[in-house]
Length: 271
View 1 (cartoon, one colour):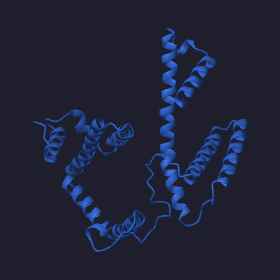
View 2 (cartoon, one colour):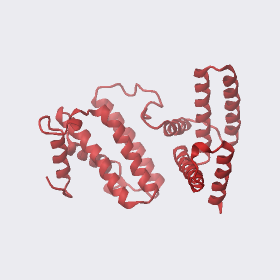
View 3 (cartoon, one colour):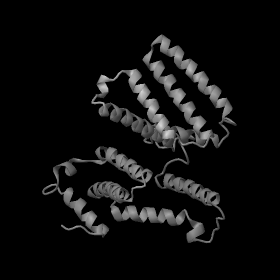
View 4 (tube, one colour):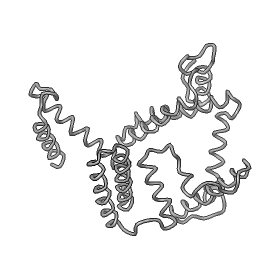
């Protein structure tokens, strides 16, 4: 087996890996559920490569993500549901249908108009799928088409955006700050009582309110937290390096010493 730029070679490799007699024992024992964490992880690694503007890594990570698609398609083919070609046909059909302004006679004079066409056609497709499956027109609630598997911050943002479509929304950011303060007060009260379940509930309410504030400020909460995680890591590495230069370990430093080094790293970032 040799590498190739042809997608058919990747399909052959996956078929060989999944062969119950001669394949890889690890690949053979996987199923849809066991592979999902890897699929999600690979999508995040694509994002990381983009954030770092590392085109070499991006090429590699896109390949890893493509492998996940091929893996799922192969497992589906083994049980007679669909194969990779069906996946390609499904997405090409969808893309052509959802872009009538490119592949048809409709016109979209702005990105907003194109987005509106996409959402309208997407809604039509969902209704057609329900009809094909013999399901009632729309037995679900208004928010139920937002995927449960999304990261919690992203799902909170999507829930809020969807609710806002029917007017369930604050008109401006200022009242949300009041709501955040209210949630903090409720969290403080539960912390005094010491009820872990109630503390968890109130902490979740606080996070949800903060996501709502971010939405009104046009700040994506997932993106904001990714930035903060990166900033925290950079500053902590600076603490580690400063201590190492004095032949000291993290464990040997007091909190006050680490805080002073943290503030120094913070100042360095600003300069």
